[in-house]
Amino acid sequence: MNNKSFSSVYGLNSAKEFSIKYFGIDNEEFYNDENIQIFYKSSVLVELIKTKKNLEKIKIFIFTNCQGMHFTISLNKISIFKKYFEITHIHNWQEINDEKRLIFNKLLNEMDIFIYQYVRDSNYNSTSSILPLIPDRVIKISMPYIYCNWYWLFGISWDDTIQKIKDNNNNNLTKDEIKYILEKNKIDFEIEKRIENSLNILKTRENNLDIKVHDFIKNNYKKERLFFNKNHVTTSVIIYITNELLRILEINIKLDYNTDLGIYNSHVFQPISSYIKNLLKLEFEEDSYGDNFYVNFFYDIINNIDKETLKKKYELCENKDIFVNKKL
Image (cartoon, rainbow, N blue to C red):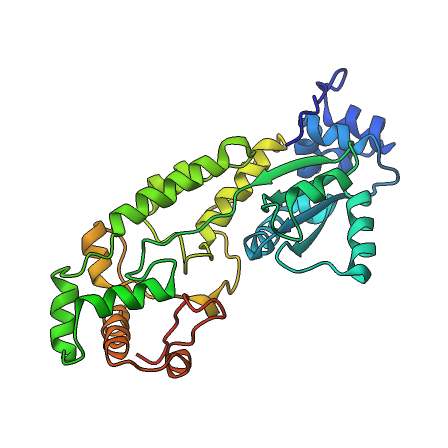
């Protein structure tokens, strides 16, 4: 968040005083509403509402990858956000052409709160090029790009995974032999090293950010599944981020971890096998078809199945390192 210093709420001893002073409403039903009771206790929200007229909504602009899109869904599960906030999300990986630029700049100028993931300077939507466009009055809240590459045998690079498997095997292996190789960890997929590296990178990225998730992921990835694939987090991570935002905005409520966020990222699901479960001592169940998934995946690679066929069979995404196989 930017370094703006929010003033304390002086002279507001009750929700009634708050509703009269900032909304011009002296109505018992209004100021007894649970949202108003929450609202007046947050100096952050009071500072924002000072600039509003006629119950105009506080505007939030979320500029992130798809993690932020589902973050938007979780916020709208909270009564105070549904009633007093207007939330817009735009993917930060989409190029903003000249036509979209006008709309984008208009959003930036109208926003009260800007939530963003850091984007490197090499990208057309880099953070360094976007932040100067935002008015000083806007509250800026930063959150990390979150990824995982240790729940699965393959790593970040599709080509590296293929090469590691081919370097350690020949094309005469049966599926039973492949299963034995995986069960006995005959190939070092460097899972522990990947965990350490990934978490260290995340912690470094978070140094100057407002919302931090490193400790939550480190402390919970064995207890429950936190990622559907390397880029797509589960609802627990989304709800944790939501609650961190509530803390920053001084909104004294928490979204329950059992909150239903609806269908979420089912199209990018990657199975976790018993090999990973046993290696990492995961406390949740592996996916029932996870072992067959990796045996077949392994078998196809050592038998030089072409990438187009692999795509159709394993439903590879565009970056060729995300696999989904619902048939096994």
